[in-house]
Length: 220
Image 1 (tube, one colour):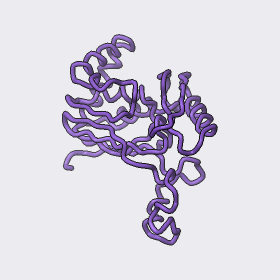
Image 2 (spheres, one colour):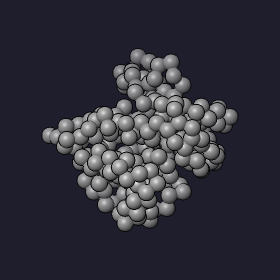
Image 3 (tube, rainbow, N blue to C red):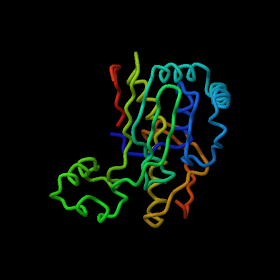
Image 4 (cartoon, rainbow, N blue to C red):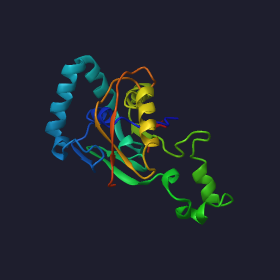
């Protein structure tokens, strides 16, 4: 499974290729002005990205994602590592909104039966945890529904938006140096790479004090 966050800027660029006319984001990437999500601005940004990275790659991304009719699920971002975000896309509409704390970031008294291990609901929660890992139930869990989708191609695009090994190590060092409830903001440095440790991009992080009938393709 994908047990590392998406880089917000790389994820934003990927989302620009979805066939949407109306996109909403609730402070998930603070330096992207809301009006930049207007369709005209999205088209301009896609064209600029194609000019920078080559028209063939841009056309490939659009081809892959324009086969998607609906997608939804949970997203993990380093900009607020304590909270899950909900990805909702249907037709021309897209939103990525704060959903609430991951269970791993929630105090046990807030769990069902205060986290009693024999409780059935607690067992279901724990089944989502990465046993032996440090991030609990934090993960990427998305489902794509469409016609003629290229599952491997879509997964490749999403994997390319994940933090690289170097970025993940830097993110972990930053989190280790902060209080558990601190939020983490990505303020610069989109980096490059595939999320598999081959990239050379770097993150700059700052602490914040505020808080179907058609085929389905899972990404998790």
